Each structure stands twice: as structure tokens, then as C-alpha cells.
Image (cartoon, rainbow, N blue to C red):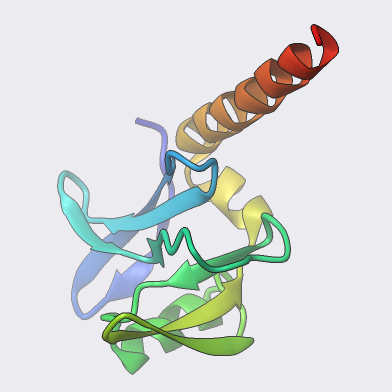
Amino acid sequence: MNRKSIGIYKGNDLFLSVGIYNNDRIYVGLDLIDEPFDDITVNLTDLYLPSDNYVFMNGNLDNELISFLNDKGIIGEPIETYKYNNGKYYMVSLNHELLKKCSPEDYKQYEELKYREINQDNNLNNDR
């Protein structure tokens, strides 16, 4: 896999992984070289996101890791805080260009899946 490190956090070399949730929202995770480390995003399907440039951040991330991700330019400062079920989640902006650079194969697959779904939906609407 052709991924670039985003830096060392608490002695761990971290990498980004990119995927897609079943509702076409982007998934972003943090990995060690050969195993998952933590999820950056969560899929809160009942809550509105203004565009693909925003995500809901995992509410279990500690403030130090959030600062690390912000300093690296992966996420922006929290825009809003949402209470959902028993958790608290931040809406943050996401740097798609950095995702493409750090995890190009994952990001390409995400785009292919996302836009395949959009094209399929458009074809269904055109068939009516």
C-alpha cells in the first residue's frame, strides 16, 4: 500500500486510511504500519452535514490527538458540537487534498465508489 506517514504521535508512526460508509459519507481512520489505531470519523446518519468537506469526529479522540490532527492540517477546528445518544461529537472540516496525498489508493477507491453510486442514481432517474 502506498501511504505516507502523517507523523509521529506518542511514539507511533501514523497513517491515514480512507473508506466509505454505506450512505456515501467518507470514513477516515488512523493506522499504524500494519494495524488500525483509531477512527477519526463516525457515521451519524441522522445528522445533517452541509457538504462532503465536513465530517463528524469520533467523540472518543482525546484533545491531544485532535490538536495533532489539526496541526497536521487533516481536520479544521470544530465548527459545531452535537450531542447524539449518549455521546458528544464535533463537526469538523476535512482536508481532502491531504487525504489524497497521504492515502492515494484508498482515496481513489473512495471516489470511485462514491461517484459510481451517484452515477447509478442518475441513471435510474433518467430511466423514469
